[in-house]
Length: 252
Image (tube, rainbow, N blue to C red; front, side, top):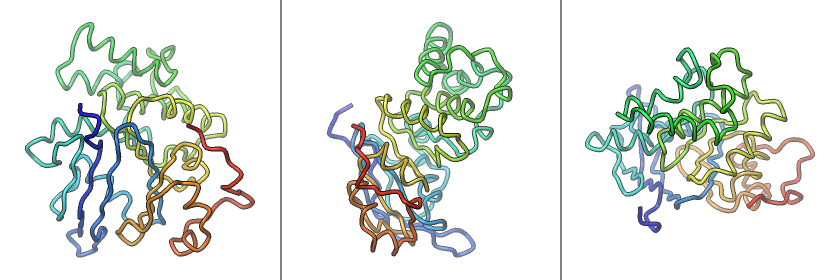
């Protein structure tokens, strides 16, 4: 793929639900190949609505979403679903097969990959999340943190252009949170992370977007946005008590 084609371009995206509730009022942003970007915003800001547009689960609004140069729409839906890997907040929404290996193989197998190529996809994806030793375990025997890592592997097995994570640190203990951060930093893939966990955004994402009232209210270096008290207050974003974003050294 041409390195100058952005992984994701959203232009003028507006969307109202059938009940008339307008969730997005014209969202514009672009994410370059290999960037790690956090999507921040208060509850009800439209974050989930935006994410569901990225792979065509929701549509019918105005504006455009383009993934790796392909417009999201009926014509390219199969390709888009492969390119945009969404890891949902609850791993149990993604894991439903008898073993970890079968869960990770499910997507690529459905896309027609078989035999040695399929085994290679599964092995590589599990290695990337450090779960290769659990391939034959039933997912429900794993800890929550391990299930989340397997959920990431099910998406990586599709070799996506962009990995979208919905609240990746929620319900994780500190060790699992750190392990997942190390995994996400090691991946050679574009990442869009929807999170309320502002320290996690700062640790993992050099850039952040603040979505508020259905528009992008700010777009800039994560540390700068989190250090802007007036901006944070205006969009109902709160850092944990005593947390100073200026004291954190950003990961590369």
